[in-house]
Image (cartoon, rainbow, N blue to C red; front, side):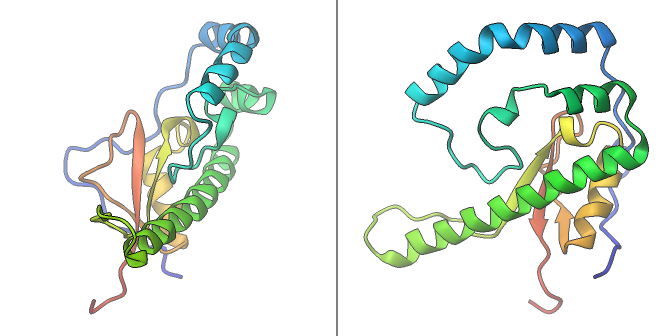
Amino acid sequence: MSISYTPAPPGVKTGPLRKRWAVSLWLQFTLQWIWLLPHAFYKMEDGGFFDQGTAEKGMSAIVLTPSRYRLERRGTQQEWEAWADRAIARGIERGLKLAEKHRDWNESGKYRYKYKDTAPTTYIKRRYYRGIGVDGVAALAARRGWDVDWSRTQYDSAVHLVLRQPQGS
């Protein structure tokens, strides 16, 4: 696999984001248990945990685990790369499944409305790339054959990834 990737447009920040404050991390970690149970009931009442083709699944989107707390406080470059690589793998898997579901929906002929874009895409939230930046995500995704869609990527919130098209198509 090629590890080259499309560089960011000029003027786009691609380095690591600033670390979170220790006090805010500690408050989130300790107080999350108060609102976690009502939030879980709300999510289930609201239709459950939908598969949106992201790296996150269910409650992991809102829970600050002890391992993530340690990573946010004292994580090294290698630890952040491993964390982001696992998130990219999950996001790619879910993005491929969602694209397959959309294609099946369109091909079934049962439904009036069709999905316009059935290309595999996913996005990675900043909690997964804070320590390596968008450039780090781009390099990790390139190893898996994916590329950053710079027009849809928002540096401070999420990196949008798309499956690379083979040359000549």
